[in-house]
Image (cartoon, rainbow, N blue to C red):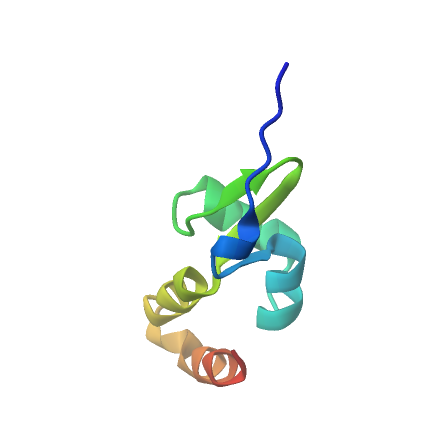
Amino acid sequence: MIDTMIDTTNFNSISLSEASRLYGFSHGYLKILIHRGKLPAFKNGRNWFVVKEDINKYLESCPKKDAALKKDIISKS
């Protein structure tokens, strides 16, 4: 089996672990969003990566009850 690695430096991508730390979501919750098709991501080897802009788009589309959380998270990124 050939395992092709993607050079992630050309993308504005971060690992799922880093996204979890930066945005305050658990790793598991981010994986649920990915598997439900709500957050685009790609796998490189055994690690998942997401693009920061895609996380921000997801936050913008969240229900209004999360408005304070969205404002706080987006201002940090």
